[in-house]
Length: 158
Image (tube, rainbow, N blue to C red):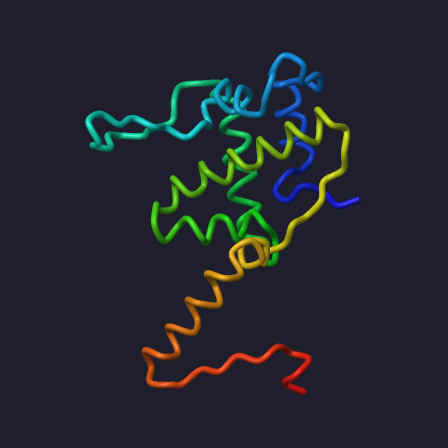
């Protein structure tokens, strides 16, 4: 069974002491994220996006999850690290870490609620779900460098 990246014994004890093991008090993972203060902010008025700061929630749980997130993003080849590196270029380090902490809380919620073991998606998860976009992006980059790109499936290329 895989261990959740970034979660050591101290963090696990802290998270469980704050949220408990019974997830019936949270109808969905969104309720748990809101209670922890890790839900994404969304403040828009007349089409103008205003500050989207995270809300005040359980500060101790948030601290444990942010600490675990910093540890998780330093591991190579895992989903949380890929999520962080994908977001950090647009949002910055701290907002990306809060997003990773939110994803970590969602994972913990489903592990506790559904009684399932952790399953690592891998760093290539985003490339798999956006395969058409990734292919188009890399073709366009090569063409901008002055190359003509012809793609063949691997079975025909050999």
